[in-house]
Length: 85
Image 1: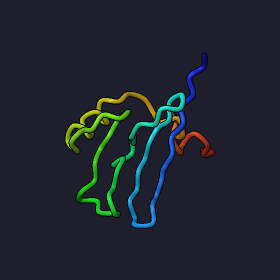
Image 2: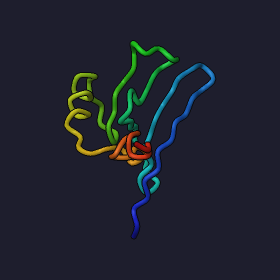
Image 3: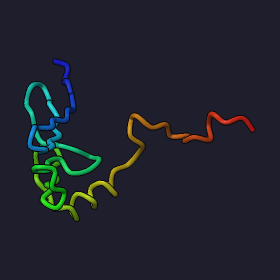
């Protein structure tokens, strides 16, 4: 069976923002780019999750530093690759 991976962002009327990943229909809080849960838009109370596991901001930053490679939406060559010299 092929595994499907889908990320989504939800914003409620009170300003709460939640990022989650859906893996084969199972939803877990997750965000590599920042806080996965921001209650009522208050960034001071932000919570950091990776694949459903809660981390402190320092732990999350450490995981982010240790990740290898470039995100799928960025090219490894950067902006200079398309420029003519």
